[in-house]
Image (tube, rainbow, N blue to C red; front, side, top):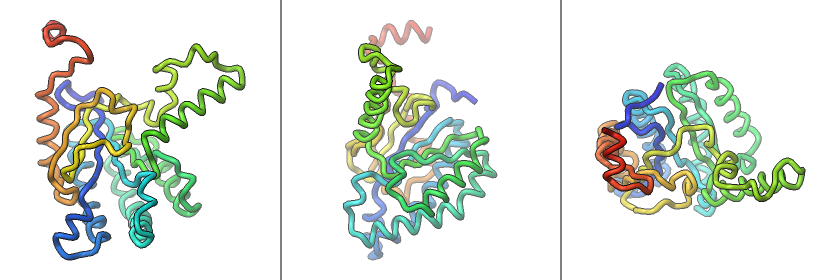
Length: 245
């Protein structure tokens, strides 16, 4: 399946605003994180409907370990419950589920759940759903550099052969379509160490909508805006127009 030129093939989302959504309702932050699960379902269904090929969600960053222990514990518990409840539905929808990041930081039972979900959905082709957990963009670049350095040490790679393409092949998500659209909810306008390498030429869409309120209509508006952007990749607008003509 290939999306039309107006549809991004690969979308990434920083799901921000759960805590503020809960605070506005005088509820604990965990209430907001739980409410965010509905938004995840909305966006997955929206991507399936729009013909998006890959969706990457920033679920837990490498910096999130600094949050209060109670909140981290609640996030982990929610993560386990979501895995147990959502995998069957994702599989039925033809979604391939993958987890991206430094998974070694999680306890073995959770890693086993992740692996079981990835194995079960491995043959699905309608949508590639990537959940970034304990992930950081700088970590991603560093681990790719370590892999390249190890290949040099083994005599499998010449140092002068390490260029952008060689390093890019060692990045997370390298086998997926290039990132087209980067969405951040919650009103902040920054990347927050998410997909730094992959976002180099992505279109950025920032919205004040808090994540639990982000729905299929919100996604559609972001995709419509994407379709109105002129993506030049260093060329002039006239060159782009000539190519389209």
